[in-house]
Image 1 (spheres, one colour):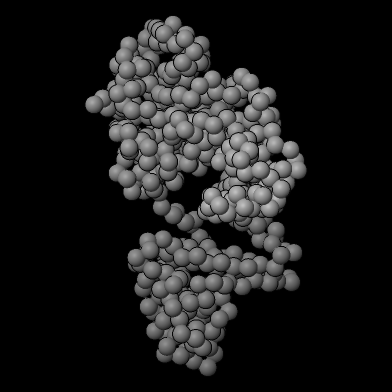
Image 2: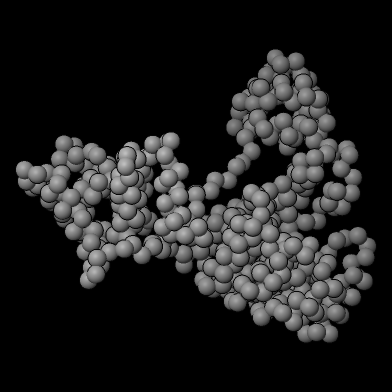
Length: 467
């Protein structure tokens, strides 16, 4: 069987464009026998995390990638070959997002050139006119990505593009520019397009994909489609093998906290813990507390978590140093730590309770503990601004969450796209608990639909619920 790696896949993290979860793409790629898979979402690495985890479980080679949408109205695929290249692309995306409105990303070709070292790039053949200019400025490997549109003009279009690439010695790359893992997902992709374009399925027209071909295909099928360009197929595996970067290489990198001259983060933390213990127990530190401090410090040193504790300690110290001080207190599993109590992060006396320190830090878990600190709501912004001043706005940020569709909002949007009236979509959304897949028992759903005055035999209604 031909070896082929699909290096252009949009997951549902390309919001309202990709119609499959990253895990579905990985599972299908493994099932089809692909040599490797890359997830390349629009101006984000968000989808690669779940894809990486799924690929590890299934034993599929995974390539980290991104589809860069640049201000010059064109797209480029980028694949970091190592950890440093991944960092550069992350900085590129951060730069673009800081320039733009929320949810947008503004990147120029010059930005790409400035962050290109260590990555491999592929330019979709739709932009072949800019290939020579990009090649002259991009100090990194560049390919021309060929894909079929299945519109009857592919042979001429691909031949012309390939000829231009060969004239300037740019190698070819075969992609299917995937939007969903299986052709059965095409109707959902149409719905997503309609939601994005704010139209209905009956009025979308040419805004929809012309066919259902943008799904993962077998290596043999891709080899057949690109039989005139066998090197384009071979190059997919070549790129996959060159991209040795894995998300496993990433680890927590703590900031360098200010510590006294001649001290290390660990020795400074130990000093703070023992001095704090004396303040907490002015009549003498109980033997139980001493034993707990020694035990915890030993594990903290082994796992190199001292800088993390110092970071949290510094934030709490700042809050309490103001006049008047900002009310704050650590909570959650951190209350099981004697060290956290002694350095002032938590307020629960460990001498008064039975600690479950393993709930807080576990060597087997191989990840830092959560230290949750609550700050009084009215003055939380003061703490946030301190963090920006302390670490720099380019090195500090609020944790991001990904908004996902819930049952009610999904029913409303899909119903609108399918042409259902507001009365019908409102009735469906109000009964969402009975319409979701986990509750979708045929008889139960039919009964529920009749109860709210809808006809369960209506094909349009059935199709809407299925989507």
